[in-house]
Length: 266
Image 1 (tube, rainbow, N blue to C red):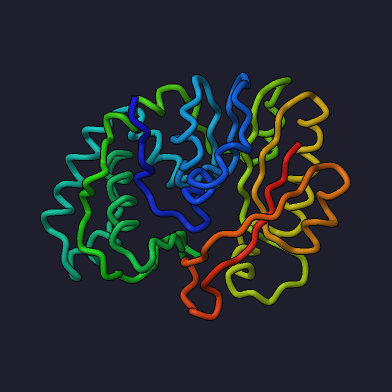
Image 2 (image 1 turned 30 degrees about the vertical axis):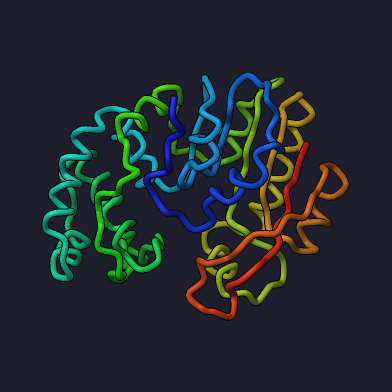
């Protein structure tokens, strides 16, 4: 079976991890559990036989559920967006409230593929407010929603808090955790934005949940910011490895280039 390419571009996506460090994942485990799903790059690459997938972003999770349930209904609407895409059409669709989960899913994929830098951002009313970008293609050569739906058929997909998902892990389950990179006392603008979504207190709560799971016999693979506060938080209970990657998501060239991250294993 061919590997599925993630259908979304997501800030912090882990395609680079699977391209360069797939060997950090154990070959044998029971269930695969991912509490911060995002674009699902790790899940689609590993293609486990059973999984629990979750994310705090309800629109994202509704999109996965729609593709899992009836990918053709999503894809047919996406083709209409591809045919009609223009500056005016983008803002028209951005302002609309879809009638069902399939058109809602197609809206998210359309906006994700044509907005500025693939960013997901909403205002205080929960309305997507990212401006149009330069990309024109809505339908991609790599799209295979039938295969994506088949992969997702192996998963229970949920919109739960990460702690509740991690607490489901049992002995020999594999948890992959990729939280927003929130750290203590940092002036990086992207990390400051993460703090809106994921407070430092959440980072501490995550560590405690992962440690409980590790003590139950679960296997842990995690990615996190390369920062002394992360080292201090996780260092005594987990193994930390430093890896390098390219950063291209920031709107400022100042924050682009090579950067380091921690792989946290337990």
